[in-house]
Length: 259
Figure 1 (cartoon, rainbow, N blue to C red):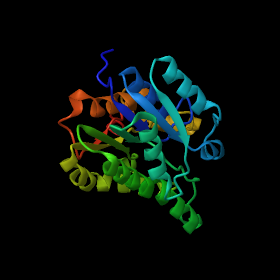
Figure 2 (figure 1 turned 135 degrees about the horizontal axis):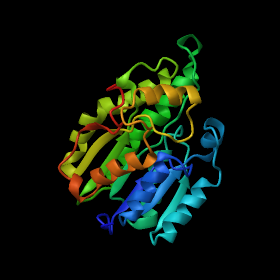
Figure 3 (figure 1 turned 90 degrees about the horizontal axis):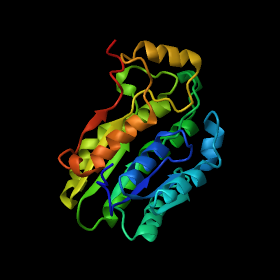
Figure 4 (figure 1 turned 45 degrees about the horizontal axis):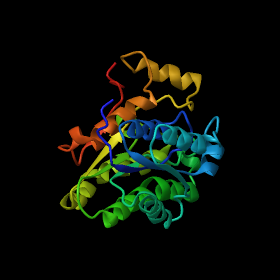
């Protein structure tokens, strides 16, 4: 593999489980030559995800180091408005500068109908999924001095159909797609390209057999997305061949919904 990111430094948020999208992104960027600081929030992962992976962050960092890259982990709770700045500070402390930001993190809210919606859950979803992402972009831009900066945000598949049991999650992620053109315009003058990825249905161990079967019915290539599919798109967007792309929301979902 050509080392198109040799000498580059990256922060990838939402990295905790070894089977997750964040881990796949970190591995791919490292394979392309980047040094990587990964962020996670172990408590959220254990509480929210099927099959929590408490040793995942340490194992992922060990993988990246074994590949010859500098790698660090920071545990940060994005419900804290000071956390985004702390994560960027950690990246600068580790590498001297940060060239690439991949905001992959998400707060997955419990599935519930509208009648059971609580203000606390709405606030938590927006704090992590929307506010923290916006502040990460701000803190990255504030510290970026010159050169070729890249930012990739992650939305969800809410534009492909209703998500009535995940309204806090879906709406807080939809906000990222909506703000992508404005954020891209705000940072382009500093030489930063900013795009947003919708990874589509991706097999990271969360889906029930019923959800799996329904998604497969709508996926024309007969399989779910893999974390590596999203990682490949991110690698393009932050690599030398992606420099002419900015302000875009790009779906990498294998034709989901075309059949």
